[in-house]
Image (tube, rainbow, N blue to C red; front, top):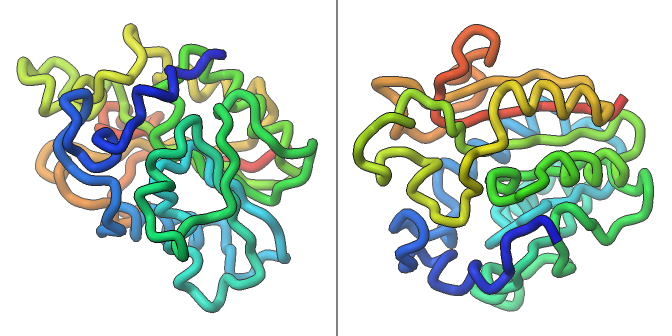
Length: 237
């Protein structure tokens, strides 16, 4: 299995009380997750999409699922979740838990071409073979299905900061070192896997600690690749 051991991702990891990652909880549906979800809705025009099933891969505490459920205009979309650990899901009240299958991102429990979309937030940087996860996402998506990827940028302008807590990549001890997922990797892997895509970075000097506010705060990776996060919008060809 190319993923990190599931035992690493315990209750403390998701609650932000573990020394293995930054001291912030993944339980709250704060501005960061709200904006990520809204960006997916807007970019892929989900309100006008046909009924379909979307996978939240590496869901953790399932922020995408929980926020999509709050929007009546999206009742035609079904969101299902997977993660290598069930500890994030088990922290949720039972009524808020999504349809869930425990599995790694590189071995998804879905039939070929059975999904209309997938989101993969803060996942690829945990994998020794991130390309396999992208291949799996492509396998389970129907033609034209979308994939939204966000991950910390190991080549960001903060990567040389002497304090690793300032760098969103180095402060989580479960991230793969040396880093694999770079701008160049995503450009090559998404293309070779069978996606048409746009790749951005976000989080620049002066606004690196601000919450995401849609595409307005992103730069095409070809223009500025030093942002703290990599953001890809892709569709299966």
